[in-house]
Image (cartoon, one colour):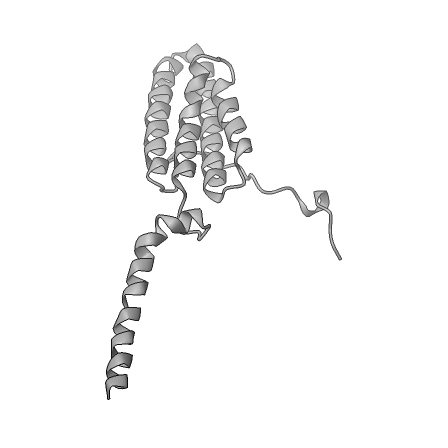
Length: 161
C-alpha cells in the first residue's frame, strides 16, 4: 500500500507543471519562438517604427514616408514588425494623400482648415499606435487606406518540383 501512496503523491506533483508553463509562456515563449507574442525587442522596434515619421519634420518632402519604409525593410522577417510596418506605411500614405488634397483645397479656402486637422490627427494616431505596439498589441489606424502589400508572386521565386 505504500506504493499506492507514492503513486498518489506523484500525480499532484505533475499538476503544478502546467500551471507554471503559462507563467513562463509570456516570457520564454517569445524568445523560444512559441508565437505567443512579440519579444521586448520587437515591441520597442515597432514603437520606433511608428514614431519614425516624425523624422519628416527634419527631412521634409518624404521623410515621414521613407523612415518607416526603411525600418520596415530592415526587420520585416518578424510577423509583428511586418504587420506593424505595413500599417505604419499605409497610414503615412493616407496622411500624404490627405495633405495633398488639403493643399489643393487651399485654393478655395477649405484647405486652411483641413490641413491642421490632418496634421493633429496624424500626430495623435501615431502616438496612440506607438503606445499600443509597445504593449504588444496589433495596431490598426481608424482612418487608413490599406494597400495590398503581399509577398512577391510565385513567378519571382524559384520553384522546386
